[in-house]
Image (cartoon, rainbow, N blue to C red; front, top):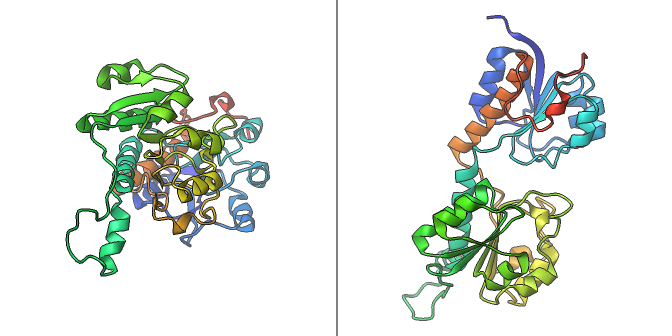
Length: 331
């Protein structure tokens, strides 16, 4: 079978099955040879003359990059979110933008629960304690954490991932509250969840889990005022987007023990952390690993590649987020 007349650039090494799909089908495929984010000049140079770019959430795809990629027909983002891409600018230039939704729901929901349990039961702190040789035997006051079973779980954003997290609470016999602009009747029926406003959720929940997109309405959704509404025994978990939380305000709340703890898989100015966050013993801070399972990342890679191949075969990419660009203008 003749190969598609397409030159594709992949901005960073991804699981091999995704690259293999492109190599088998396309005339030219080049991959960033270094395991790091491309510098701005490197990215601008790499996208020139390309017909397609498979990019990651760590790549800022703005008007300058889109103009450098003149003639490019698609930017396939290997992520659920696409706030790293200037969608309006891409659409104005007739460039398709795709994402990889759905495939990471379970992995992210599982990671959310891993974080929730870790911060409540102080697992990382206890692990460091033992490794440092401080464990001298069982003690009735040693590393006391918070209870999980029978407590109240607050879900902010009851979409696919938020719903998956809430459904997992059944094994812990939890009361579930959720805050969303849309009523989730399926979740209400499954776990008896109750839709409430943000203030009620924050003040009544023992665990607050964030699952919202990042836009103007959710930037710093959780700040000093919202943290002040939470119980001093409550925990905050964020596996959505870093800027949803005012990280400086969170550090202060954790430092003052205004809330019991927080577990963050994403950060406001990633990979940088707000000053003082890394020193807090009531914060759990893994390095953005919500979708980091072999199976999930492989499915994300192959889905991103499949979006590219669909377009060059004259089909609508299954996960296009700006379908108004189709049919694409001649380039």
